[in-house]
Length: 288
Image (cartoon, rainbow, N blue to C red; front, side, top):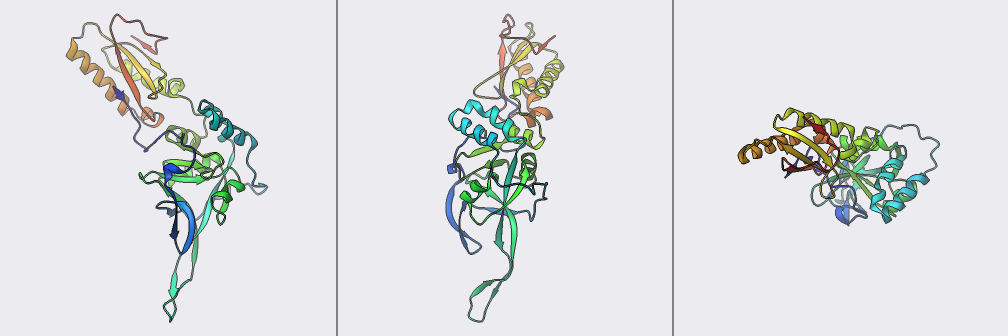
């Protein structure tokens, strides 16, 4: 049984390298051929200068090294997230065609243009804010884009403000990384991302909802490769089968409706109902 799968933001774990998932193609927008993602929506007129006047445009060596390690070993994601949080990223600013006038011969001429932040839309409807580790990776993506240096947490906040569910880092490489869901929220809040089974707020929320269900005897959180964790629960041995099913359903509904878990979980928790005689396979998170 899967409970509490986060749907406040449409998420997929940020692990796809390259641009294939975002439908990279050539197309014409505003009279200029540009190598871009499909269906771009241009939003936002400016980003405040957060104080990077001395920035030389090079990438943070620690972040570059962390991206390289992650590209070879996905288990190094925690190191990548730790390197990303304190660093500077570059959000692109691009020119888009504004007002157009038509001359006596029927030729269209650009009269005005605006500067805007591009938000990219994937074929499946996901929206992403592109961000870059350096001027070189920005130019690799689009030579005509202007860099707006921002702290990484601010870039995450801009993504949320523009209804983007993904921060797409260095979409043209050399290593591309997608940050979404609970990882993106942690960056926006300028705090370390912790796996849900180790996150104190997740653990306390689960402990509280177990305590609130009178038929729960004990429970624990365990890691899982297929979800954000396994919630293993032992219920009152006096329950008959319908009563056991009802109690398990109440726990699942409590997980799904918990406000903390809704923003801290991406893939939800698997609920495992253990026999009353079973010993928990680890230290109990809650015991009545």
